[in-house]
Image 1 (cartoon, rainbow, N blue to C red):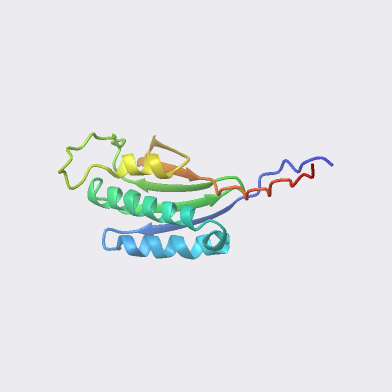
Image 2 (image 1 turned 60 degrees about the vertical axis):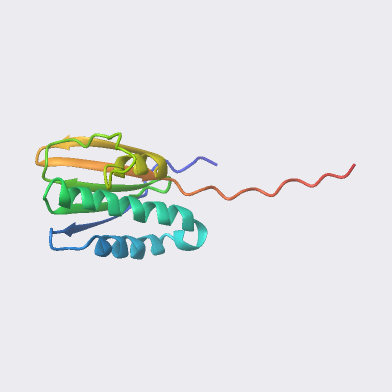
Length: 145
């Protein structure tokens, strides 16, 4: 049987002005992840996605001083979490001092996401983190001897 090569994707988008809280972004994201049944099947991935949303939206609001455009796209292989802001400056990973209160967001995203990248856009930049749900483990074959 030939595999269907048509792309099937689902997406959601939300604008988060500076007056929005990061909690609103997490709650909105959690609602949409529930439609994918990830809370039941991949709770650790859900936690990683929510922490990443927190970091990316915070970066847009604090560093870019911009409304954050939060876009979630599920293409049946990867959940793409994108935050767009109005700043043209691409984020840079820092090597913060041990006692620094901030500067670890991208290091955290690098550990949580399967992949992430930032790219310039005509009116700012977008940062996208990709998450793949874990594949269910197959039971080991039990052999007789």
